[in-house]
Image 1: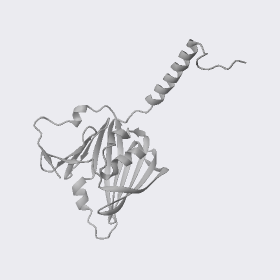
Image 2 (image 1 turned 135 degrees about the horizontal axis):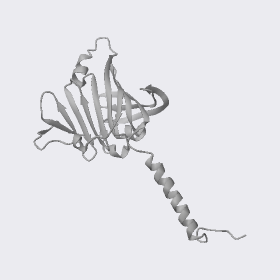
Image 3 (image 1 turned 180 degrees about the vertical axis):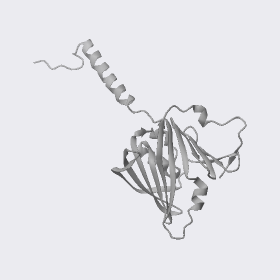
Image 4 (image 1 turned 180 degrees about the horizontal axis):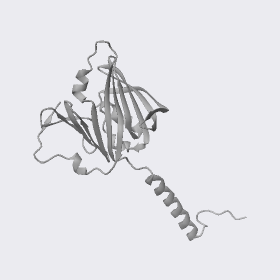
Length: 225
């Protein structure tokens, strides 16, 4: 019996195989679409040390926030907080901050490492947030200020492309998104004296205008450090 190769198959069969493979490839990639919209969070500060004053943290970040995301851009707005806005755009290597009471936008580099990851693990189906079953990334890092742990609960229902965060090395953000490939629905920052928790209370998948991530022509900027 003669053995067939791709060179002996009829051209119509080769074309059919190619089309089927192309359709399967494009369909599988079309299913992975980034989340676009808004996630609302509540903030909770829990004192670990008996005498720790949580009011300073609430003054800094407030008790509620809205996180807008679109294609490698986010705008995080804190309500009634010293840090009113945190804006990231993947095309930049800086992050923009608006602080009370000034209208000047401060900017800081985010492409330098202030810590190194010393350990991490992903706990499958270890948390549920707003009815979404979440995996939990537990990541430990070490910097000049000591060691700390972050726990991030995430669901594949809120996917993002980690390539957008590849240069964002501050706070190991590039590592975190390369592991999660999704936006977090809960963030727990564990310090020796306190725990800070951001928990999603509402998600809204909707189109976000690109202009939402831009500044007006008369905006004043100043380098923070």
